[in-house]
Length: 321
Ligand code: CP
Ligand code: NVA
Image (cartoon, rainbow, N blue to C red; front, side, top):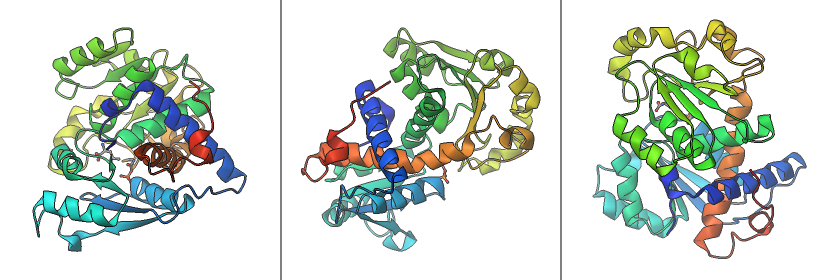
């Protein structure tokens, strides 16, 4: 049983395959065609944290593919009415795929351990793989190719940064992160990535200007993620020099894009001027969540092998970097 818990679970070829499936489905949608790859299939979303983009893009995407979805609320009692393994084994009797957004990464791992249907990580404290896939797909779409891309992350070494780093490592996209001391990736993590991706250009610095030099896109995210609300004031002080504003964008190459997974805290990690500038691609980036979720579903449910998923879009479109 394949799951998508982190991008460590996916090979570079599979990432490119997801991009190709996405491209195919996006092109067809633009032509008015919603290919019913998964008629009658049901997706359940189990979310312990709020969501706009991840939730709605998965639900809309599943509808486009001919299936349906259920947003599970508190009343199903996950973690409260029965043991998570009992919950998981039972829900898999009803649905074909589960999307889980959990406070702790261990929860999605536990669900996957007991699941008899594919489980997709819709964000945990540690990773956000679907976001990172949509981000690199968006960058590729805007640049034409990832071959000459460098991505600069300015801000917390959080769940999104971590998934993006792995995605970049797998696809050989140079990655630089600028974060204040105490908010960087652990040295052990950096060493593990350098070992896993020996030819990959990876820079970890505390200097945002150094990170954005030569970057095709500058990316940031909130300074305090969901679950870190009590650290908000401290983080606001610690990240004060890390705002992506017009001055910092001027240190990036002309034409560099601005990216953000959203939601943004305007005036903190990003200035209004940058978020609303011509360089900002945050809206198409969010829009691509829809198309990439469909690519992920086509890949995962097609790969899960009931045969229903191996329709034209699953068979078509060779991978392209
Ligand atoms: N970027 C993202 O995952 O947004 P949501 O929290 O709204 O799903
Ligand atoms: N790092 C943010 C991302 C939200 C999509 C969080 O976890 O809250």
